[in-house]
Length: 252
Image 1 (tube, rainbow, N blue to C red):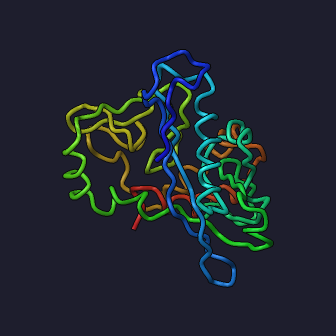
Image 2 (cartoon, rainbow, N blue to C red):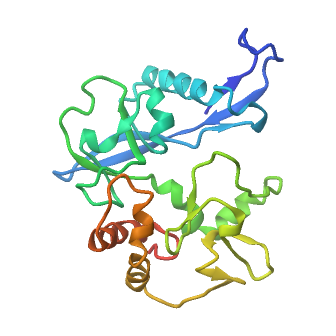
């Protein structure tokens, strides 16, 4: 964990106050010949609300990247907004022939980014990246995770201005507002599923993953309004067949 402290001679604020956080995790890329190539990922970057929109996020990221280089980390990849992360040297991972596990290999995935920290570290290899298994520990060991969470003060989950969208863990719909979310049996907000998939603690439709893909494919024209390159209905379904198995409802 890296900490960004106020009081660097330009902020004029009291020193030793933690206002940001970013955490790196080990990751792997499966090369086309079947071997595993070591890599790293990170996220999320968090900045205290009082200090947002003041450049601290980029400053923290640049500092953390320099620390990563000092540690001998040669390659980073992550999921995020290219418009922000390009300022720290990131570009589309597809340009480096690093494919995202949940997208077709020939896709130029706009949110999957990479950066070679040590020149020549990646070389001319080609492979497929999958997020660290630890990212899914809450789903794989829910009781143990809830017991661990209970050791911390209770936290209220909420959407913050400027954050990247979460996705419905049933249909993949972006969740950017409370109104987008479903509800639990007690009427509280469910942040995993959208209002069209989940209400009062129950799924609104009993279906298989393939049936959900067929249902969502009819809205491909709406999806294309947010995509840099329009997809056909079949291309969209193919993309979903790679993406859906990572969603909570369909994960095995």
